[in-house]
Image 1: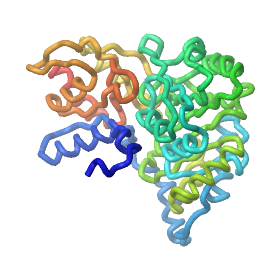
Image 2: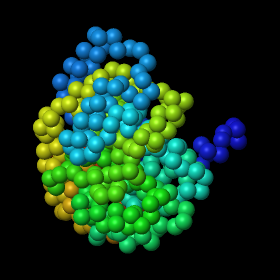
Image 3: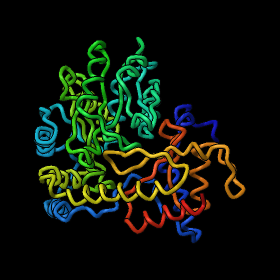
Image 4: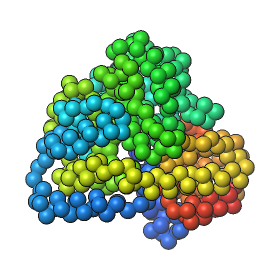
Length: 394
């Protein structure tokens, strides 16, 4: 029956993070004690003040279709959030609310890319970027980085990757999977290159902006001459622990926002009404209301780095944001552990799952074959136990 499927779906990869999570659930179902460090999902409960707003929305009968691009008062809250946190002036006609930031990214790809357009992806990049670009018939162009440069692309690398077919640059800061955060000076360096190529647009994925340990987030749309060619993507999944509520949004030039609304109108229409109402409350609250989660992630990062440093063969840097470490484990390639030969990062991740009962994700899924991604969105007890197990089987 596979012959009846479209070439589009047959050419699409399965999300490696979701596949590993499914495998972990399967093993748990068999009675195995699996510690999951594969998903990018905060382990905190949603703050009560946001839950209360959702309950109020139900009582207020927000049960009808919402506007395709989001409620006006939610877009006003998003506009105010952009001004407060990012010094960006996006009017409500420049904002589109979607069913998660992943849909926001897919909308942008579908309305911006033509067949054969190239999209530069500094690697490592979030696992879905490449397939979203391919689905829109674009061509992902990977720019490899390494742990020695904190997994950041340099202006020279960007310049070298640009061709007459280059249409866009996509990147995240703080980065999933590396946790790297671009400074203002580093973004200025990339912007200086892009100024010479006015037809290249930028997708800046800022979903982790608040989970930032360096003291201040910088948006590339705020760099001189970049505002009119940047699509800023954000949402409430990570900082507010609202992953299942599925609310993402963009701030963009109005003509791009209108195109995304047009596409979304034929695809899914408006996002969940109750979740939108709760998001207004989340975004209007001061960041101090979620600071306890950010502080805890910072503490966990330091704990995980300290524990992993005790394992010979792990090469580490210090990620400045998000809730991941992305160690280089290539020193294990070609070695045999407990009768199993480790040829690549995928072998290594499967080995940890089968022998240590710890779920991680291969770096190959993120465009870096020398690393694995470890999420520290788990309790300190789970992190200590997981790394103890990893150390024992290595």
